[in-house]
Length: 236
Length: 235
Image (cartoon, rainbow over all chains, first blue to last red; front, top):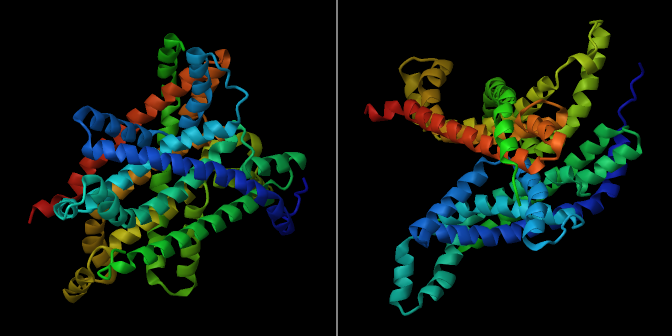
């Protein structure tokens, strides 16, 4: 049996074809991050300030999400929500874009993960900060937005960056429900070659992801150094 | 929406067939990756030289790329590589029929876990003050003895919570092995679901199984943390 030799030039020739589809990956990822941050914010608020049953519900939600493989959640959302929707509202969701289901799934996931980061950051800023702000005449809301939030944001940033990178890695699963993102396109290209050049095309995808994540890491690191410049004692 | 509860209960007990595969894959990968992870951690702590740079690159690559892509790549690479090796060694083995994909999955998860675990080991070892090593050397222990008897026991108790995280993530990650044809929990559920298009019920079952599994693992590690940290209370 002859084995086709490994051809590195295919890696480089397929990168330009694949790159436009990174936009789909990023679109889905960024929407999930934005929506998930809102959800995480609500959850963190529920865990710190809410009534016992709200707090309990938020804790159970986070625990469940932490225990769920993302591919299982993706499948539950992809098969479950259209059926739920149809029986409640009589709307047929089956021809909706796959990206809707991907965004729902990863919003649920990211919200659960990030709520812990937000909560920890929130609690790292001591209550005396709020008390001091209120004592000089700010309202509770002003104290939160002008005093607590800016400090908590700096604390949360490194973990937030990690979570963003993790989310982008997990959202690579989107191709399993048929979204044509970076990997989806890669698989299509392999199918067009009748299964040839699989290794080369996957390496190209890996390189794109690697480059992207290193870049994101650098960006978060420089934002972090910029934001903590007012704090010479230095949280790292 | 009506769920087929009979099907759910029936499938739930069938999922037990996939449980040994999921647990075995997790345990074997963890066990096999511990040694390499420790070696990578030591290389990375040297900071200089080609070994340190290669180890750093490896960890960065594994952490910077999606697990699913690593699986896709290795699953197209490993069988053909093994085939070439087997052919050239003259072993009468048909790789594509006779090798259980479980072993490919095992290689992939071991490679992945080794990188993640090495970061945990490294930060745990670095968290032990260098005075401990100096004290060990000053009373006549060798470097290796100090590592084994003084540094590692302390570092392990620091590392237990992170190892728990890695285990939970690994057991969640093994659900991707069904893409390679490994008959784990998710694969069993998928097969059951395909008979009557009961996908949502089957996946909800898997969801429940994973919550139970992760709860058990976390309880186990909470106990392990107490055990590993027992020297602290002896003070």
